[in-house]
Image 1 (cartoon, rainbow, N blue to C red):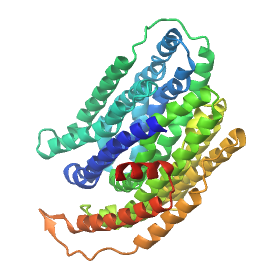
Image 2 (cartoon, rainbow, N blue to C red; image 1 turned 180 degrees about the horizontal axis):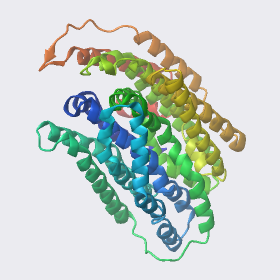
Image 3 (tube, rainbow, N blue to C red; image 1 turned 45 degrees about the vertical axis):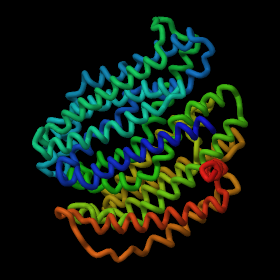
Length: 501
C-alpha cells in the first residue's frame, strides 16, 4: 500500500482543494453571480454530458486499465493502445451527426414543465455533446497515465482544473467580461483544453509506436469494452439523471437547489476518488498476476481506511449542514436539503465501506456481471425517481432516497458476488467498531450548535462560518483521538507514529 498511500495522499489533498473551490463556487459564486436559472441550466448541461460521456468513451478508459498490465512486451502494448484509442470515435461521430435529433428530444423533454424559462437551453444543447466528447477522451488519456502509475497530474486536471476554470468564468461574468449566456461557451472550450493537456502528458509518459496491427486478444478486448460500457455509465446515471429529470417537471431553478445539496453530500467521497486513481491499476495488476493475497490485502485496507476518513467527513458534513445552508442567498436551497445531504452522504459512505470491490469485479474474469448490474442500477434509479418524484410528489428528497436504495441494493449484491467468487470480504475486526464510532459521533454532535451572534460582511453571513469552524475543530479532535486510541487503521497509526518522532 506504499505507492497507494503516497499518491492517494497527494490526490486527496488535490481533491479536497478542488472540493473547497467547488464549494465556494456552489455556495457563494454560482448562486450570486449566475443566478438560479442559469445555474440550473449549467447543471443540466454538465449532468447531461456526464450521462452520455461513458457511452461516448466506449469503456476504453476501463479497458486500458484492465489489459495494459497483462501485455509483457512494448510491441504488444503498442498494438493494444493503437487499436483502442480511436474506438470512442465510433460512438462520438454518429452522435454528432444525428445531434439535431437529440436536440429536438431534449427540447420536447424540458418543455413538459410548461416553464418558458426552460427554453433557454435551446442554444446550449450542442455544448452537452462537446463537453461529453472532451471528457470521454480526457478519461481515456487519464487511464493511459494511470497504468504508468502516475495519477497526480491527471487528478489535478480532473478535480482542480475544472473548478478553477468555473471560478474564473464566474468572476468574468461578475465583472462583465463575459455574459451569463457566454458562460457555457467558455466552459466548453476549457474542457477541450483540459483534454489536450491530458493527451500531451499521457504521450510524454508513454508514446506508443502506432500501427494498424491488432493485438492477438483483440476480440477479448472488444468483448470486455462492450460489457464495461454500462459499468462506467451506472455511477453517472445514479446522480446525474436526477438533475436531468428535474427540469422536465419543476424547471432549472429546482435543479440548482438539488445540485447544491448533492454537492454537499458528495463531499465525503474525495478519499475514495483519490485512492481509486491508483488502486484500480494496482488491483488489475494483482488480478492479472493471480495474486489473491495482494488483491485481498488491497480490498481490506482500502475499505477500513476509506471508512475511517469518509466517516469523519460524513460527521462533519451532516453535523454542519444547517449552518451551510445559512450561507445560501435564499431559503429555497435549504428546503429538504438536509435530508438530501444525509441520504446522499450515506450512499457515498456505503460505497467507501466496500473499498476496491468494483475494481476487483471490473478487472476479473467475471466482468460480464457488470452488464446486468449496470443495467439494473440505471433502470432502478430511473423508475424509483419517477415513482418517488413524479408519482408520489416527494420532491428532491425522493430523488435522494431513490439513489440510496439503488446504491445499497446493487452494491450489496456486488459485495456478495465477490465473497462468493473470490472468498474474500472487505471487512476486518475493526469495521463494526468504526461504524459504531461514526454513529455515536453523528448523534452526539448533530443536534447542537454554538450560539454565535449574527454578523455580516457586505451582506454575506459570517456567523455560520464561525459556527462551522468551531464545531469542526471539536469533531476532528475527538474523532482523531478515538480512532488512534482504538488502532482502527494500521496505516493511519503508522503515520501518527512517524510524525510523532
